[in-house]
Image 1 (spheres, helix red, strand yellow):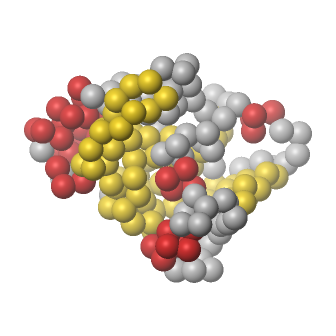
Image 2 (cartoon, one colour; image 1 turned 45 degrees about the vertical axis):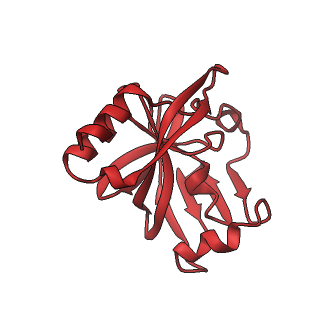
Length: 179
């Protein structure tokens, strides 16, 4: 566990920044359709029951939408970020999860290079989250990155979002539906 915390704190980074485009939409509903974007989709969907969908209420804070998610048993609020390549955790959350046994050394995949919102490239730690629960849907073995900044935002990125065929946001009702 000490090794995991050291990896998290010393060499982590991620693709960051929230999606500014969606914040200024004049329409009240936006739909992202991932069903045709990747040939791996059929194998990704085997991690949950096909046809399953869920709708959750988002919270709007400081111009971003937060989605409640349970990661390896820990309840957290993530920024919905279609521009982030993966789910992103800060070193603070990773440390808490490691201390509670929610992340172990076996969950560490390795390191990878990530480009952040400023264009800087950093080496970061890649882990597998055993469970990511969004509403009633549970995804298994979802890749995530750990950021070396304890104040970094939690981002719900493509490693989770791409496992759904369609994501619909209703800005009028502050809900998001995953199909």
